[in-house]
Image (cartoon, rainbow, N blue to C red):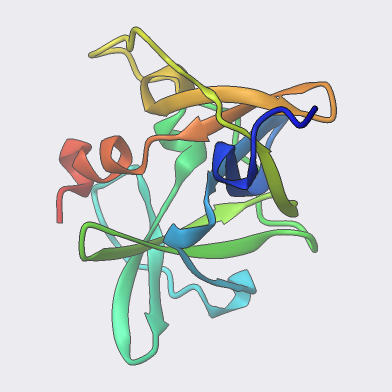
Length: 151
């Protein structure tokens, strides 16, 4: 007897940010590129790492570690910029490491979000498992709606 089918699976890009395993829907990922392409900019926003010239479009690169209140480190040799598109908006963010593209069963939505508090739980849409580790599916709409990032 077969349980579920391929439509019951979510296809995600799994990546690491500090010790957290995070995922985003693969349909929102336009490219994965090296962070050497990042152009630093002078800004008052603590959430902006810089900008990126992507296919002749200047896009912001968001500092998720600052947004999630995680300790920050400079990009390592494994770091990559994920270029994301959602609701006709394109932006990027730096991941410490891209793990792999995964297919996991439909994941459990997160019921409550802490508003006003700046931590990772505010930006999580759902949870799942990756090789017995917790996997947090990011809410990209919440990330781009953040006041400093509204664009």
